[in-house]
Image 1 (tube, rainbow, N blue to C red):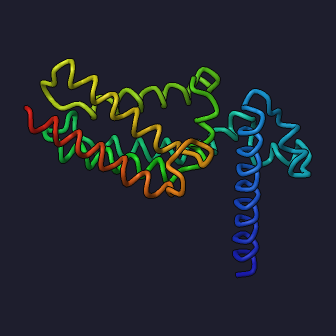
Image 2 (image 1 turned 30 degrees about the horizontal axis):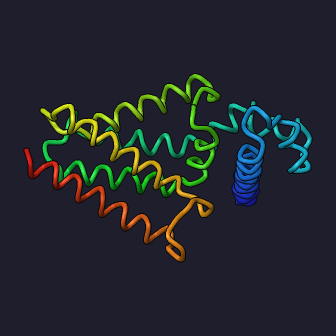
Image 3 (image 1 turned 180 degrees about the vertical axis):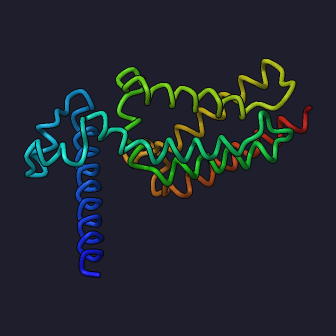
Length: 201
């Protein structure tokens, strides 16, 4: 019984240390960029030796993966449940809303991905996953037999959705408006645009 308790305590301490590393790494990545943050800086901020850091993560890529994987795994799960194409605007809207909620619930990963407008700095394996997510979610924003104009509008709606999810407090907004109220308005705008496009089909 005591061995079990010690094992559980050690596991909890290790998980707590991993989480602290991810928090500190996120702060440093946001401040200095991924390339501008060496492992030594992360270790120093935590008052760890590099050996102690390596006990939890094998490399800086491993740390980045620890930050991003919860989001990427959640998007994978959402895409796995989706059909090849949605047959109507209602199901498409439900998917886009659920997708936005996944992004909102993984704000740390979204913040790190927002370091740069380009993802060329990302390790290849992570970049490929994100490129697939972008391509597949864009496909699901389209309805069958859309015209060129409707497809461009769908792309614009996805751009609006992504910009809103990475919304930060220092961005220009209506004075006194909360992020929650802004999202409510944006969701209404997107839903209205989807319904309008469906009505003209």
